[in-house]
Image (cartoon, rainbow, N blue to C red; front, top):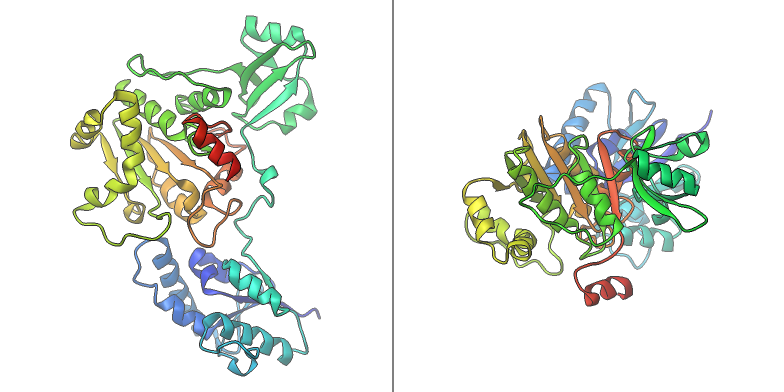
Length: 432
């Protein structure tokens, strides 16, 4: 009989995904007692982390009805769940047993020795903890359940270049369509993927794949809103942002590439056209650098510093922020802090989730599942600028959403490649 693989879960994993506690089928999952202490300290916290802490506590309490949790209780997937006391005697020399990480390391060493050197793997979202484990010869891994791609080159860009003949390109401009006959090419295209067609004699076209054929780009901006896209990616973005058949749009790109500006102008256009009744803006509250502490005032006052980019874009578009303040006073623009979004439903709303790369997939799922009838949601972010611990360019919520929705008829994605804010901003994104 094969021995079950042994995994020790760190606090960061349990708080990152509440379902991680039963996500290792046919394996033995050990939860250190010290981790339970840490989890319990987060049970009253507002948001996803607090919910995860409460879920883990309740799940383990219910599990006790089926046996002794110290000896191990097997669940439906064949997974065995145990809570182990600390093995402080096995903490490597030179490490303090008062450290939670070191006590988990001691547990890993102790369990391995007690099981005749059976391989034990520590699962943690903490990068430094994984490095420490590796230095001590202890196997450790990130929590990979939500990670879909394993290199940046694999991330879906939302566009591709294909080779066409001059006659195909001419036909596209005359008939406004290109039918795809190449089965191999057809199977590789994603719905709402943008196509750049080029011929050997330097003729070209741009279009969008609708699942069967390539159609021209469109932009349904209201006449009162004037936006001039500066590159092909911005044209692609405006197509998705103004397409009523695509209620979920994801935009990634370097700082200054126009993500927020194009989205805001499209949202204002939709309001002016009567397609939506309000704009709701939310974002992860994650500071860059040292936190400045609590902010005074009501919820709008507290959110003002985080929404400065929106005000800045109004200033660019309308030369001042009077229009922005008027719309907020009339509740046409509403601020919805991420921590308080659970339980709400947004109907007839254009929702903008800024800095989405700082959210986990579980936080973004909470937001996306709030979307009601006749609403559109746009997730924006630069996956190279992540300020949240335990997630990176491949495991953040925005990247996961892009990959999971890339073949959905109701979603579209564009990676904006060129900075348009200024030469210095673009150069900084490239060099630093």
